[in-house]
Length: 349
Image 1 (cartoon, rainbow, N blue to C red):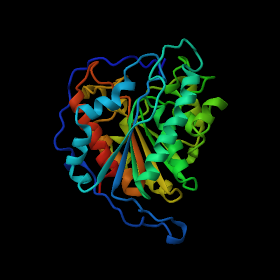
Image 2 (image 1 turned 135 degrees about the vertical axis):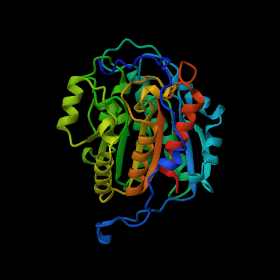
Image 3 (image 1 turned 90 degrees about the vertical axis):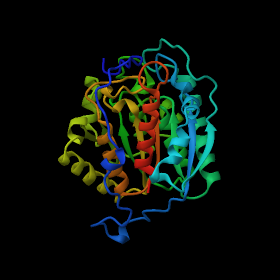
Image 4 (image 1 turned 60 degrees about the horizontal axis):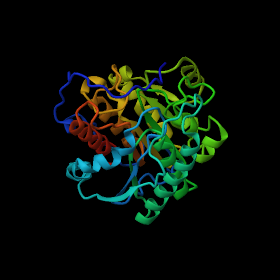
């Protein structure tokens, strides 16, 4: 089963990375070539502020741990790592704390949607927390979500939309898994295998209502690095209007060029984009501290280049880093460093 989503395991370290900043593409923040000014909204209205929200939830699946990750990431100095990066120099990081959660995880044998009621109660609380943090920080503030499992992105997008209801958003979903199941197609009942589908309006009415979905149009969304897909999930993705960029393809010049073309096309019709980065999209040989490591994924340098390519096309409303699981295998410090570099790629200047 592709969304079997096993607990993290220790993986031998096989890749070494040099200075990631040398691998990043130049970023163009000016008007997009070929896009008429009359057909565009203002590209950059971002302030100097980045608001940080923790999403302490592992309710979407069958094991605990990720509900503690936001606090653990702060404890290992992730915010200090971000402040030290040159691309974020001068930016003001506002830590808005964690969204209130009644329970971070609970066992549930439901084969359709584990912890359905708890998730339906939590996602609106996360959305409200995100909305309040953004509105309190001022216009143009960008969002950084520290997960938690990847259902966090559904609540984050609901909060982004609530803060600016008229804004149309694009979505770049980085994940080794498709997360495009519904309660009718899931082989496990893990709701963390469903949030991408929920965001674009697929799934049961109560889950969609909890995420204020749909918050994204399928034609404005892409799956990047997805490789471990259930058969029915794969068929639904293929029949949808969601773009799909595999890990192997993104490792080539042609793949990055294709991603750039997609990102520019979407940027021409949306106000800003959100980057959902499930850290299991990175190849397991990097010894990442993640919940469901998978071989054959993105090299960190490729992931940074892909995020930079999307950010070069148009404004970024925010980024969320999810599926980090510290203390159960993998290199925690290296994983925090990688997450910081990806945030810099998305929100840096």
